[in-house]
Amino acid sequence: MHHFEARRGELHCEAVPLRRIAETVGTPAYVYSHATLSHHYRVFDEAFSGMPHLICYSMKANSNGSVIRTFTNLGSGVDIVSAGELSRALAAGAPPSKIVYSGVGKHIWEIEEALRCGILMFNVESREELETIDSVAGRMRKRAPISIRVNPDVDPKTHPYISTGLKKNKFGIHIGQAMRDYEWAARRKNIEVVGVDCHIGSQLTEISPFVDAAERVRLLVEKLLRKGMPIRLVDIGGGLGITYNDELPPHPKQYADAVVRAFSGLAVTLVLEPGRVLVGNAGILLTRVLYTKDAPATAGKGKKRFLIVDAAMNDLARPSLYGSYHAVVPVGRAPEKRALTDVVGPVCESGDFLAKDRRLPLYRSGDLLAVMSAGAYGFSMSSNYNSRPRAAEVMISGRRFEVVREREGPRDLSKGERTATFLLGRGKKRGRIL
Ligand SMILES: *Cc1c(COP(=O)(O)O)cnc(C)c1O
Image 1 (cartoon, rainbow, N blue to C red):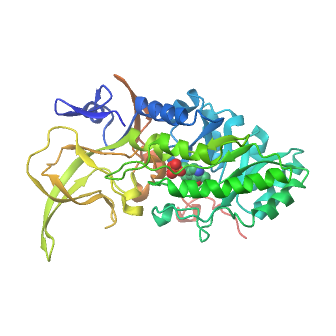
Image 2 (image 1 turned 90 degrees about the vertical axis):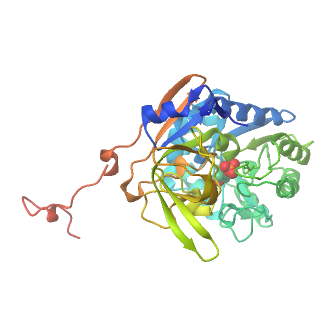
Image 3 (image 1 turned 45 degrees about the vertical axis):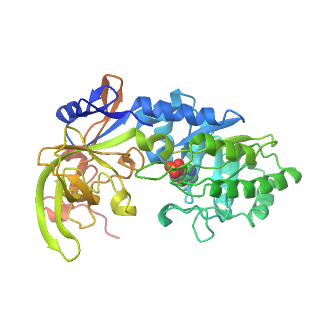
């Protein structure tokens, strides 16, 4: 479900014509629908009403402060993966008591910051991390609440780059070895064992991998409880998929029912870390066609048309990175005739495409297009490659629109950069001699 709809031949986000946004803030621009974000949160939250639960929005999917605040205003917590995310989550109104900290490589200073502000728990991914947290907490005279991220070794049947719950992945501690580390952790003065965590991957379109993982996690939780460990939080991560093209992911209700069933009768609070499912279809990337050109026919493929648009792989990396599909739809009325088309950006890489081999209308230069389902892992994965300023981000609510992140300018591109004094050939040379 989302609030991007054509009305009288013009694509709108809620009550605002996207053309207006292109004219006012320029292109490329990310546009988010506040109503869609809120709706997705509420549906997800209500789906879990059968059990005590805490939703911790996985902010790496979209780290814009207004997106995060949309959720924190509705009672959400936040799942973070760095101290940078911690500070942005706090700035967006997340209470520390609702922040969980995941990730395989937490730096000492990051652990210190998280301990200082008193987060809900660390999801720990290795024995060495556990040892580090114990000693950092000891130095700070604190007790660090932890869960171990277990790797349940289930195949999420998603893209290999976004599957995380297999033995061969770098994530978590194998579920068969976790007991040893729990027993070690339980004996440390500066560690408080509070939960069990797992996250098996992203863009899952089936229930069964979640159920398999949940059943394995439940067995571990029961074992830990029998050993007297006070497990009160069971975090089953994120990963529920969305429809980009023709996928039919389970509804949040189906997903929630399966998860709640797997943990029924346990006196624990479920922690959920949804990212993509909350934000993916709530955002689009608005772009304008700069040029068109027709390439000659190649063997077996026929002619191909290129639409060169002003958004590129630096703005939306998913197609280049994972070969992901994003629907490309017209903002205004589209020509009837179609042709085999690649939608490509200005970046100097053949891998720079937003859509490949699509039968699209014969758009012309100046036309506006919406790259759909770009709310998750869109802006948050964007870069300045080719010295392209990052796009503006806009949030719509009803008839209102607001720029929630300014388009970058030339100064942002060289922020923090200095010319080495020895290149300037005048005055006193600086630089350290080692
Ligand atoms: C990325 C991530 C999530 C969110 O995944 P989605 O597929 O966006 O729901 C949740 N938990 C952890 C630990 C993650 O790394």
